[in-house]
Image 1: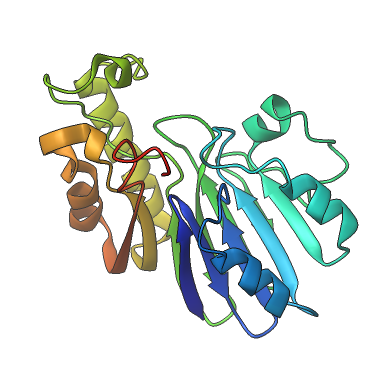
Image 2: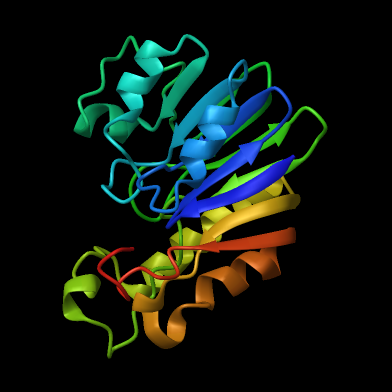
Length: 220
């Protein structure tokens, strides 16, 4: 399995006969386009953790509708908020539920934001965790007020929810090979709080940061 970083929160996991694309939004370097072009004859899965504009590209449903071997696995809120035809998805992701495909087993967990976080177990046992927007969104006092306003819970409530989700994941997956997780500069001095809590809770072999240029450039 090869894991490719595409942009922002998008990664593509490539195997000999399939390609799994997480939270595709933009492809400024053409990396995903090249992988999709090379994926002729492979099964392609687009996994969408939630409806936010920086985690979903509106072209995906059309692509899946026109390619018989391309499949959409969106979260329940993405189907509703993006008005996706309910007959299109291979499965709709809801936390607490699982999806079985010929290429992987998917477990969906809660998020501290909207949608879900997911753990995929591949056929050889390799595990991939994509957090979506699940993080300890612990904004320091000096953070931009517009960012703080997006969080509807107190810092203590946020932390308790986040740690509870990590315990749920650890119960089923005490070891994860590849974790794709937000390292968000908008959190200022607290940007590593969530990633470190993840590493202290679950045995992670490889941590792949995402979101790490969010807010630093107009092009991210």
